Image (cartoon, rainbow, N blue to C red; front, side):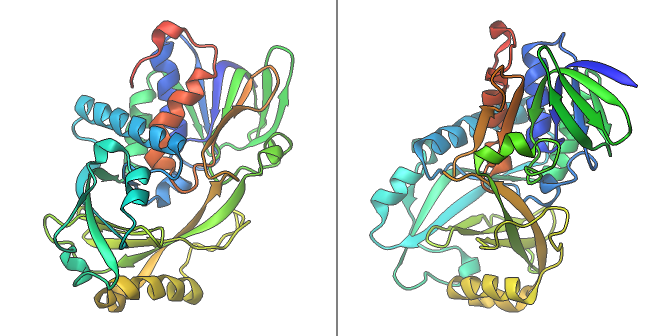
Length: 355
C-alpha cells in the first residue's frame, strides 16, 4: 500500500511531536504523518530526566534555552494541566567563577548569590559558592509527549511500531519504505530519530554530521523530597540533583563518558562501574545521599561535534531535514528546535507563530 503525505516526521519523541505540532500550527491544511519505530515517547523521551534550566554552553544554545522557556510557558498557559512543574534552582560552583556563570546563564535567570546551600547537601562544599536562579522546571517527558500526541491525533496521522527501512529522495518526493511493507511518498521528511541517528535508512545522509551517541546514566535516590526542595546544579561536574516531587524520590544525573553505543543494544540496567562513577561525584557534594542511591536509569542520546543541536537540510533540495543531536538536552531545547525545523520547510510565513 502506498500513502501520500505532505510531511513525514520520523520519530515520535517530544521533539518529533513538537515539530509536527509546529507544522500544523503554521499550515492547518498540510497532511502530516508521524512515524515511530516503538510507541510514542518510547525512546529517549521515556528515559529523560526532564530538567529545564536557562543555561547554555554557547550563545546559540542560550538563545534556544531562552526561546524554549518562553514557548513552554505559553504551552502551560494554554494547557494548565500539563505535567510540567516549576522548581527553585541552586547552582554550586567553585569560588571565583562569577563571570563564567553569568555568561552561561541567560539574563532572565536572575542569577544571584545565595546565603546557604540546599538542605539536601548538608552544607556548602569546601571551596564552593552557592547561587540561586529562576526559570527552572521539570517535566514527566513521557507523559507530556503523550499529551502532545493526543492533541495532534485529530489532524496528524501516527504510525507506531513501524520502522523506516529505506529512504529514497527523488526529484519531487521522498519515498519511505516501511517495515510493514507499505510505502509513504512524502513531500518533505523531517528526521528526529534521537539516538537512532545511524539507522541504515538514513545513515549515508547523517554520517557527515559527525554525530555520536553517548550513554546517559542517572541514579535514583530513594529519599522523598521535602516541600520546596529544588534542583541543584553542580556546575563544575556538569551534573545535577533533581527532586521528583510527583514520584517521591530524587534523581542524580552525571556525565558518563561511554561513547559510540548502540540504542538497540545499550544495557538498560545500572552497572557497578556506572554506579561507582556516579557515587564518586555525589559523595563529594552530598555524602549523606550515597546509602540511598541503589538504583537508576540508563539509556543514550545523540551528541554533535560542536555541542550545539543540529537542525539542517540533508539534501540539496531541502526535502530531508535533520533535527536533533541536542547533547542530552532534547527536552530542554525541543520547542526552539521545532520552530527552527519548521523554518526550513515550505510553510506559509503567515502561519509562523509562537507556539
